[in-house]
Length: 213
Image (cartoon, rainbow, N blue to C red; front, top):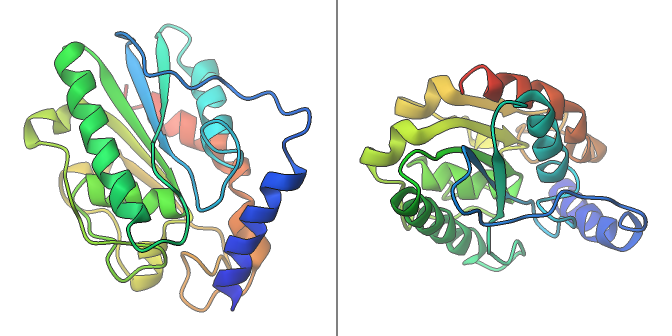
């Protein structure tokens, strides 16, 4: 029930929080230095995501002043359908592969919030099957491109509630925020509002990413 309340709150956010919002424009870039690939949460409004993607991208722009940044909004439903996360997983991998082929010097920052964290988990080879709005892996970023992923920024990651986390090649480049009491990422968590507060972590996430670029 708490989990459904979280997802419902995200859907309501779309109707009340967009007036007057100025969000960074998403663009599948030509050949920027850093391409920020953002997978929004379930029903999350905003360009890259009102709660996480947009504020993180803005924070990265402030931190990486010597770099040219672009952004990509992952093309997937971000709804409660059984194939939603899988569609996002496929789109992330296809986007990274096509950008990497077109731009040999481009690097990537992957950002995922809530269901979007499942999307990113799957894309780097960590299955979100069994997690809230998760899915089995349908595609992974090729090993040859793994070094070009500079940082992975995750928020309210549902696999955390299963006792899982990012391991392997991406572990040292991953920061995974789970707020105390967030029922999406903390087994037994009961604070629905905790899942909606990750904007507060945008600056810390940007600092982490900047240290790895």
